[in-house]
Length: 454
Image 1 (spheres, helix red, strand yellow):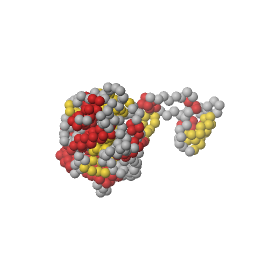
Image 2: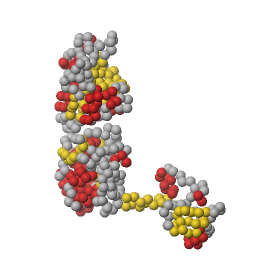
Image 3: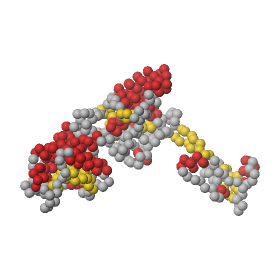
Image 4: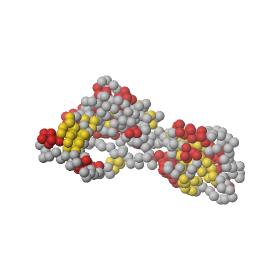
């Protein structure tokens, strides 16, 4: 983690970080089961960020940690008792993370929902199937259930960068439920007005409120905003969760109530020996069966070369802890639609299609990679792979935009690697050497590893 105030990186065990994080995220006086739920939420978000699941978010989250001195000032004589309570909440949920389909969720939470939580698409513009609205009548005793704030018209104009115009004040003034159905004569004197459901003449209002005349209008100087609940309403309602805990529900019950269809399970983080743990990669050896692909002068078939590379990649990536799928493991023809369907069902962290290039009667050689024009992660992966392949002597032909079927039809980041040219005799000879195939596969493996550590 990066410590902003000291401008330095520090490392601590995950569980110790959760202990330090918890006091800034939830009321320490809450029921221990509610604190456990928040500990699992904090751990889930830390693990999700560590795994870089939200690649569209290039800026890491910042977290508020209270120092030991701050906690002692906050808690006074309850400091030791509260520290033990936090340790208990973290220890009794050690390693537990909220997941869906094996991946840590975006565990959103808030203080008080006010009656129901919110659907994700109304807050973050994306529909997330575990962030669904649930009824919550458990936070009615929250001190943050109702808040009232008064704003002057000028305050509202400045905050929202708007301007209220009163060019003809006599045409304004009706406030629904308060002042309605205003009838004026040709000189803008009030003939009648409905005030709170009762009709008065302009003269009656003038006399009752001691106005100077019946030619009057109303302009609000202040508006009172009354809000119910605190926070954006997504996910876990802390005050609701505390009430559920007080009623005897466990932290597991609470989390499963506020996050739809999730599982709470032990989750291992990547380590030195398994840096790709938690990552799913799909390798697509192109062609197969009767579809040879390109064929070199010495008889080398594209379908065979890419399958050999794919199998080595699978073995190497699995050694690093990754979960690897091949679209084909045999010399068989697999339709492009079937490959796409497989990828969209499994939804890997990355899809990599392997091919060989061919340009008749030329000496062109080297590796080039294609990605869809809007796939920034595909371009990033491609550049990293090519840099690593350059290190073993492969000519870098760059990352290019492609409009191929797989690049367009698969809903995850996808690249197509043209490993080399079978139309180049010397390059074909390289692909006949087992040692070259292994070095090439190793270079791709290093690139994939670097991408996920980037």
